[in-house]
Image 1 (cartoon, rainbow, N blue to C red):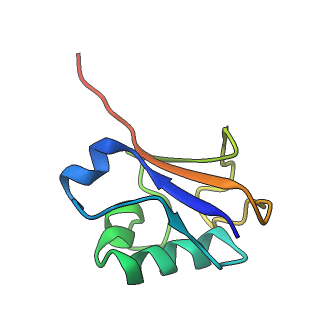
Image 2 (tube, rainbow, N blue to C red; image 1 turned 180 degrees about the horizontal axis):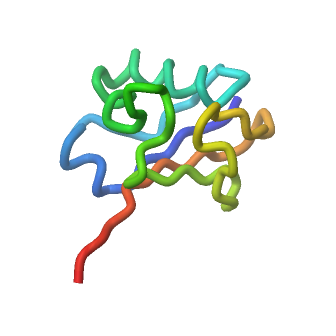
Image 3 (spheres, rainbow, N blue to C red; image 1 turned 90 degrees about the vertical axis):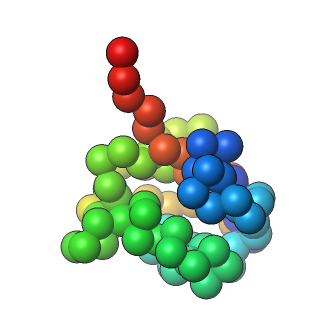
Length: 90
């Protein structure tokens, strides 16, 4: 079962976020699970079309996902899915 990890910056908006095991077989299913555990997090991560928002990055076992639209990147059963908010500024 993969583990979903969140950056500290996301806890500013969702203070109860913790490393969370997931049962989903696709990244989309995993994000649905995270929204059940942390209501509203999915709408923060995905836009109205279900695509990953520009300010969010997801890494699977240290590699950034390629499919930001359909969220079909494969992940191993024991992998780590790391969700982070991209920071900008100067």
